[in-house]
Length: 88
Image (cartoon, rainbow, N blue to C red; front, side, top):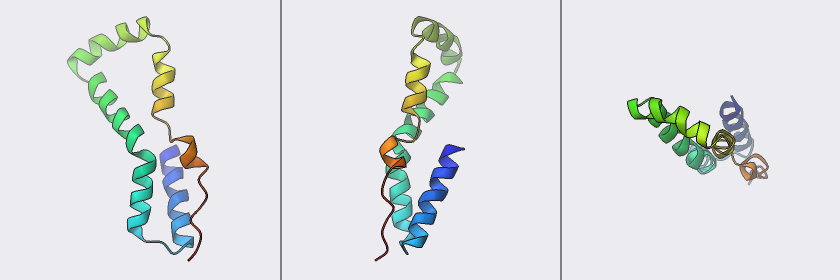
């Protein structure tokens, strides 16, 4: 949900500033690339045979991992507080 709201906000900012779709996509990619890559890797691991067996063990040994994962897969704070693009 937060990614959808963020992408909509970025799209509205870009539209109001008369920016290009290319700049919108580059901006959104810069905001989301790291967290989406990590989320994809973790998701693929968790649904694998090995991941289904190791995930519960790993999380019991490292209980703080869930918080780290949640923080690492969020939209970065600096992207949420970026100054909107100003009209040309």
